Image (cartoon, rainbow, N blue to C red; front, side, top):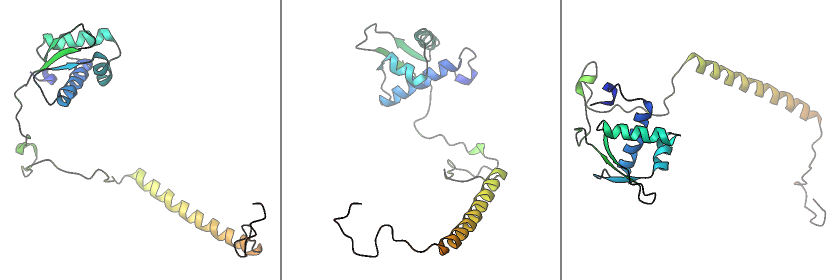
Length: 165
């Protein structure tokens, strides 16, 4: 049964199942693996022990997994995840596109920028800032031109290392 079709499940069940799936994946999809309640609660963002125990027992009762509590804090509880008939390869759905030309996953660069009105506003702000900085630098050059050159760091002459900085 698919999660989307099961009306008994709420977001906490799904979050817990996804966290358990991550642990199953970390254990290389072994038939059985052991879990630590605190780690699973942290991964699934469940804050209450009673909610955690209720959800994991319900998932076990509804045959999404097999949960065997250990009652031993050093060993951890045993989990057996069920294979719901998935294939070993990547699923490619030819009929998912409008014209049926796709034979795989479409790759889109992650840094692709979407041009929007807001982006144009920001671009215009950037251009105006450049112009304003250019005008300010011209004004500063005019003002600096009237001030005689001062060598505060004394880089034009030999340094006297006896003088304090």
